[in-house]
Length: 191
Image (cartoon, rainbow, N blue to C red; front, side):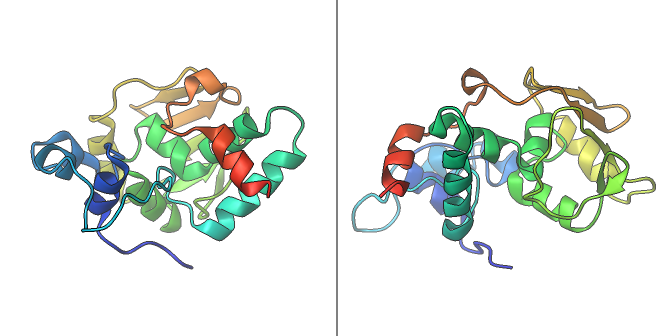
């Protein structure tokens, strides 16, 4: 499995905004954006989206799937990315960052509809019930992440006491706070 093992704060600086890749550190004065609000390196500004932490090949597959789905392709793409299991855990506040969510999922600490799921790219659907696995040793880590949570989106319902949640519906574009221009992405990948 491929993954980005480089410096996470460098990605935030390259994008020019907080991507919350380091979890709690992004909320402190130690955040790289607060200390150095300029892009890293000597040359140019690369403007790729690293918000969801998806590699190029998988992102292309999401673009193709979004174009085959009826409706607006850009909104379909963002909906697919938001409905990834790791993204949903971050939105619910059960993980401080996407990398922490991926680790909790890969180690088998979560179930969907009573079945253990260990694939971060698993697509959740309306009506799915997400819960921490019975006897999970990561309950303390999950509870500490819930303390950082602001507000759960309207398309999700969370119970932080029992570490369970439910997907009520698919998200609308107005509910997705990703700092991307999806139309430009669709134009790039439609070539």
